[in-house]
Image 1: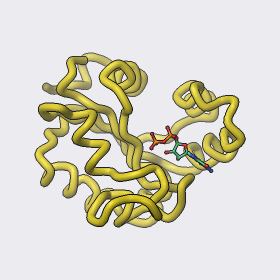
Image 2 (image 1 turned 45 degrees about the vertical axis):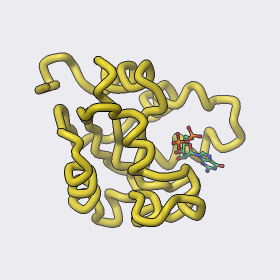
Image 3 (image 1 turned 90 degrees about the horizontal axis):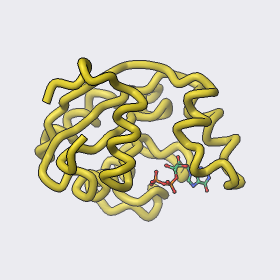
Length: 140
Ligand code: GDP
């Protein structure tokens, strides 16, 4: 994956609360092109692997329990400067600290249940995109 792509998940809280459509609308309105899209549910093994970098953190068990409790929407997004621009669009990890108009400010309820994931680097965007999608599922 090149540097004009990022990876996102609409997390179980936002799916449960009926925000899939509104979040995808915010994403496309901000100029991101959806090049891969999937409605799926993470297994415990998937979630532990995806969030392995956080395995020593005190909230790890809570995080994997949350991320596996219901379906998610996974997507690869394309835009110039995708990783950085998407982090701006979603806002701070804690919705209480997220800027007005950001996806987390609008749709998240807590630091744990914060509606969306966004890759934090081009390298992780490539790893995370490949975790969820095979090459033939990406339509760039
Ligand atoms: P992000 O890059 O903004 O998603 O934030 P991090 O990489 O720091 O954390 C990954 C995910 O772990 C966050 O999006 C939250 O879902 C969760 N998380 C982070 N901090 C906390 C916390 O203090 N408590 C809980 N329960 N979850 C957290």
